[in-house]
Length: 479
Ligand code: ADP
Image (tube, rainbow, N blue to C red; front, side, top):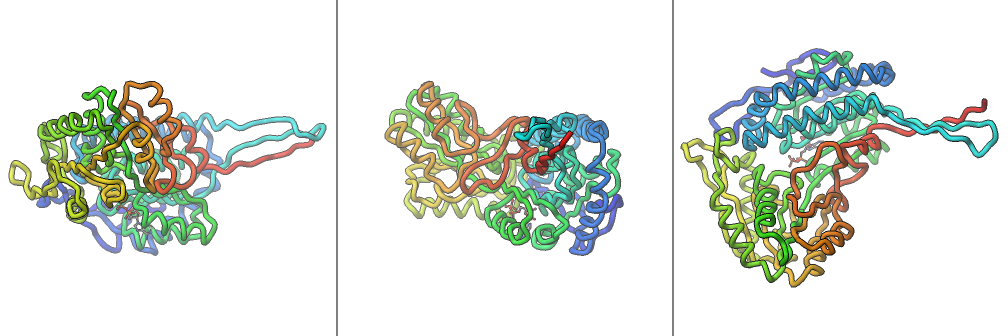
């Protein structure tokens, strides 16, 4: 059994969870200890005790540790990618790519530890100097979802540690394997005892304990809107800092002048790959009249070539859905869209077995046409390979529809028009905008985050991560 890492020790849990392979439900990936409230509190206490020394550790010490962690992750990308694909269901190339991303993130933040920056300026008063510096916050509670089992933990843990904070990390219940492997690497990295803690367990128990504990200075959360609201309410109640990354209903606009191949590739790649289980997935294709029918036909032709199957088998384009609940939700949204008058133009059916007869949570990617903006399929996040198409008269209507959503994470446009691309970049109400590129698949060294109902608080990743993981100090000195 894989244990929790608390106060520098591997501890058994109160219970055990079974990690099941969604590509083959007969395959037990492993058994993982589940922490309870008392163990979570122990982890928090040890992180609190470790903070004073760690917050004063040298940049060199932090660089060395984070850089070595990044190197090990990169060196083991094939093995860790296999584990990730096995427990989460994205394809092996996607999983290996995600692991590499995690390794690169640790290396990026290793470098950031050496570049804390700061400002120095004269005061408005004579003979007085002003220094503006950033300091670590304290213990960071990190709560992550199942869809990026190593990259999201990496992009929260690496900056937290780089800027001198201690960490209590609670991964999602469905994917303890990658989290445990990452914790195992961190446990050998030279971090002082208590600086990093892993507490696997239930959201309502372990997660909620992190939210309510006054020793947790800040909470960074990625997951559903419903849980994000609970995180916000709990943190506001005790005035703790928090950061939320939640849902999306990301639009991809396709204009008449788009390169058809580029547009189809963007739509299929960001709509269906990783089984549509990315917060940056394009789930609404907003297509102008002149190209609509050609585009839909070409997307369907491409979809029919996609192989749904075991995540780890060569040739699989789309792995399984992560679990039975999510599969049920995806299929129910296909039904809801049809009941509201939309057309199921392609796919959208459950396939209980892979081609080899393995029982898993498979479904064919779904394309739903003839939809209107008011339909639930265009307003609510599905989080699966279910994509709808909206018809737009012209660019202006397409832009309006793109922004007509409570969410604002990513938005894309396929067009050959510099004028429309430039206008869209400026007027899209999303945190990230892509021109002739898929909405999903972002760089690891630049800010990530959304607007409106998608995100709350400072951006993650890149140098902008410092905004959340540090607090500013202004110091005045009279010479
Ligand atoms: P997802 O659809 O990604 O599972 P959730 O919001 O349910 O979205 O889960 C994201 C993370 O939040 C998981 O690690 C989960 O355990 C955790 N979580 C769920 N409920 C709570 C809660 N009440 N308090 C804190 N964390 C929670």
